[in-house]
Length: 227
Image (cartoon, rainbow, N blue to C red; front, side, top):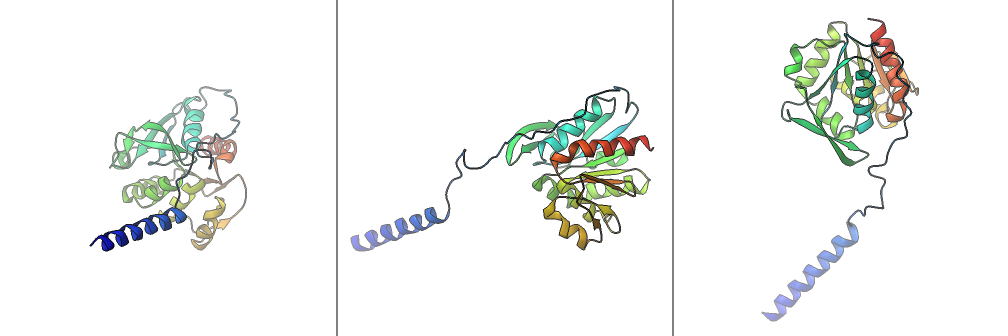
């Protein structure tokens, strides 16, 4: 009996040793989670530039912080009304991340369901790996996006948010840009992909990543001024 117990203990220790050799805890100083982005935004020159414009930013948990906070700040500082629109299963708000690290709670204004009956001048599709996976698989979000675009109103997608356009069935034949990891999917869905900071095609603006946000908001300027 004692021999069996000893053998079981040895095997358990060997198992733990094997596990520890394969998996180890990530230490705080090993990866750059939470790293700040150095993005220089244009100064405000006209606080009424977007007065009367209404914009929705679609997002879920895990959205990359600058892809939601900087467009929100840019638009509201210039007079736009901006709604944060989230999945119906998290109506109170979402957690946004700063390069893998949960960073801020964002209070929601509407859900994908309640926003369906609203009229927006522009929808913004944000990035962040988890966020975009949720949005592109949410039927209510896709319904909102398609209804908006079918009415002749523009869309803007950045980073992984460009893949939401695939699920919405809007990418075929468009000239777009996007993050390097998404370009094969974009091409396979029928898009013409370019490596530029921002591209506008048929009323849809796309950008590659957070570092392109100055070009992204310049594209938003163009879309809203053309309405």
